[in-house]
Image (cartoon, rainbow, N blue to C red; front, side):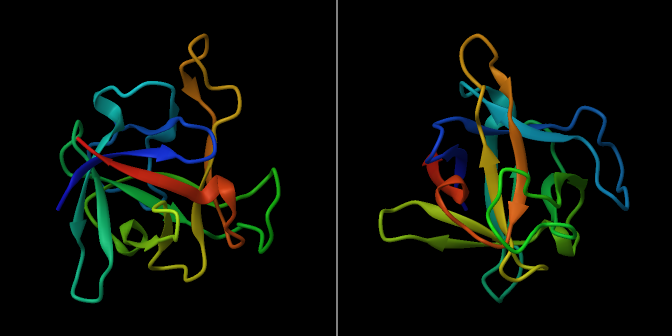
Length: 155
């Protein structure tokens, strides 16, 4: 499957995974997932088939064996500036590290959780720019809009 960067269609920033401390499986996941202004090694991911039902995994290229993880408990069923849930890293593939890519009419994608149907990855890249190159908030919501749309850019 492809090696990509995941760019927010709304903010133009890139999904970033800092998994320096992720060395074994943790029940609540670990590491940090946020945004980056430029493409660097921590922003590059490999998308692979997770199983036969169309789900995929999103693995860090910089941190082998580490995957994007979404726990949508606590995510509100509506769009708001304070969406919830937890998006972080997981060593190895668990149920919360499986996603569905939903292509939109404009060529962007929604990244939906396979474990939490209707929950989507949300990227709030406000304040991430050249002066403050990483930060922002990556969470999830059950009400997808512009902040949930991403571009998958081959690398």
